[in-house]
Image (cartoon, rainbow, N blue to C red; front, side):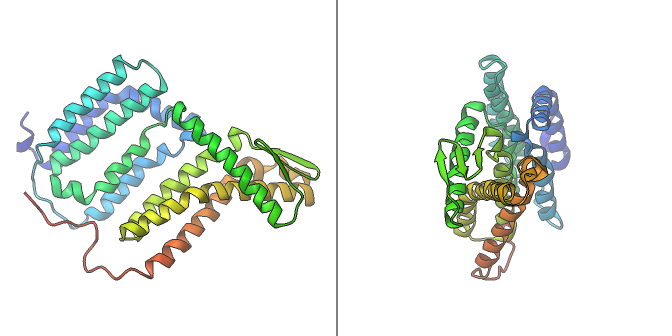
Length: 293
């Protein structure tokens, strides 16, 4: 089939359909993991977010029917990566992550091939955002969880000290009068931390234009993800010892992560609002680029 004879949208749909045939099992395994393991819940949101970002910027724009032929080589590279995942890595979580890298690479290369280099440049962020669909292998995720545990313990200890509550720390355990709090991997807030980082990236892409301002907010979100969990530990500890012990086992403890995630997002919004005041009004949308051949 000569792809250049088809409209770009139809060519892209054909290549995406081919990817479903080649990577169907990979997609099923990835979404099964996202549904069953809270550390990967964010994966479910990626496709709707990327679709919305591209659709929002696509209205009223035309990129012609240019085919960027170098992207064809990237399609072949994605098939090679898939071969490595399938025959060299077996059925490990690393194999699943590698296969998803191959699939996302196929999608991005298909977009560039069918819609051309100008469209690829215009939508580089949402296209690269698709890599959030790659499940983080355990060998990389476990150190992240451990870092969040230790950071959360230190942040909560600092809050207790600020409010003059006697506190001591032993590894991942924070002790205050009448209560020892063990910050287990399940309490590391890995899910809400990944959500915070992901949503921060979307917000700065939509609301800010300056690269250094975007980088600053994203960098700020990293320690903020630790601080919000420290605040959660501090709040539950104070309420459990000063108000009602039920807070130690109730909904705030089990399901309260969303509350502190919203608090962190509100802080991100305030920072973005402050930084936006220093940006000059754009004369043209920052994500548009002149068409090139």
